[in-house]
Image 1 (spheres, rainbow, N blue to C red):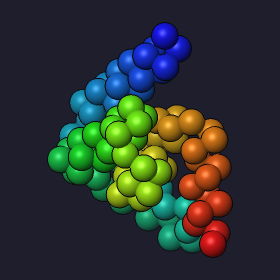
Image 2: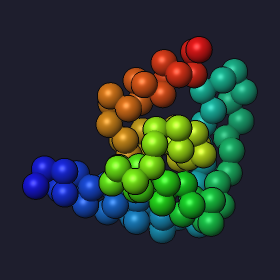
Image 3: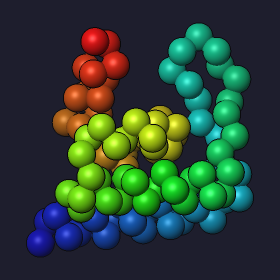
Image 4: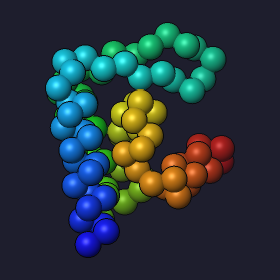
Length: 90
């Protein structure tokens, strides 16, 4: 039940955020210029996050949704975010 509630919350947040035609994401590197994300890119990345949270995709698939995760880090768990940062340092 908790997992269903979490997934519903994430989907709701992504749908509400999807109402924006263009979003901005900050890169974590020294270049502080915001990157535009088109609606179609946002929707594609949101679907990757949703499928990952449902257990349908491996953690490696989140690399294709990196901009969205940087913009909305709450879309995935803290544990997964920590694993992603660890993999980036390798």
